[in-house]
Length: 494
RNA sequence: GGCCCCUUGGUCAAGCGGUCAAGACACCGCCCUUUCACGGCGGUAACGGGGGUUCGAGUCCCCCAGGGGUCACCA
Image: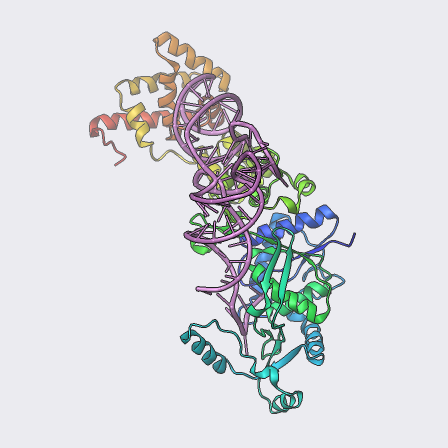
């Protein structure tokens, strides 16, 4: 069995988006499972579009997801360089080989010439194909024009008939008629190769065994195969992954919200969750399990179970999955996840990490994302500025609300120690004495202490909050209710 | 427009000639319960359409429709 070598080869024109991330992930899983190598290569032959910092973004995205590579521009490797912009000599070498063997030729047609041909074709409702004018040029003529300094591109001589079959591991044999292709350009007039030529040379010289890439490349593959054959290169295996589509079934783009892994990172998603979600978007094991860790995925991964049809991503499911991972996270890592924002908001400092941690433990399994969790934490660190509107109507609106809170205030003020268990006992006992339901005391108290109607268990919450805060917030709520009766149902909130 | 790929519930997706067509997210009930989540139980919901092949088709073949991709001196 030959050595498995796969690559992820992004162009550095933007951030790492989830489609690219999934492609990288599948390559990574395949390499790791097979004991092969995962190679990162930057495709930056288009200098007008390439930007240094966006390659950086991709590298960071992959690292954050935990997809490590064995060879790449930053760490080198035996078959480098791993940046196309540094591989000019290699391309020139093979370009020359093709020229020498007569399988490629210089073309001096100007972009204007071609544009004209295109327009003519359009007028006659013909599909445009390069006419092949320069294909007939004699070598002497060509070198003369070259001498004269005329700009030239290099075109591949493609077979006029026959078929080119792409053996695809996911889709089976896909056949294309060669008559469809014209003598396409393999080197631009600046001397740099076009994409199709560069990938072929790179994949061959980096000894890539499997090209696992997005479906958008399928239509290009026959052209690449033609180049492999012209060069006499051994061909790798191909597998084309279906695309990830936006919820409206269109191609993913910025207008669809968060699509780069950087954005998910910034929103506080966990990399494990994103990896797990992406893995299952287009691949399945056939088993009824949704949560897979890296090792399990690695073990189970198989090209045969990759889906052929495009997948629409669903943020709800990602959020659910993130919640699953949040629940499994140990408290130290959870604290680390929360710390930056918490510090920024002044919720976490040198002396209150115990308090912070207690609050986190209470709310943690009520939130699916970091931001949700942060949101659920507010009243532990800030005074209650507003009471939930519906809650006010329901729990503060009635005449007895003051009475209830006064009772609670009395209980709370007289507590010796302030544990959840004791508080609960005191509440229930008092409720019994008053011949009311404990809930009648609990609901207004929750609203008074948190401003909300949905919180963790009230008694745990009180224990963490502490007696002092409980008393002051109860008093404040009593004042609020008093104002409510003076100001009418709208209340001082408005 | 030419060429290529794809088509099972709203979404992911199992299925690889014979199943009452799994499961998960979401949604809706119920249970647990001081609220909310978690958890448990149950429910609504799918083979794009039409022809074949076959005793039998979601599974095989053909046509149509729809969606996507690609046709650059971009990658």
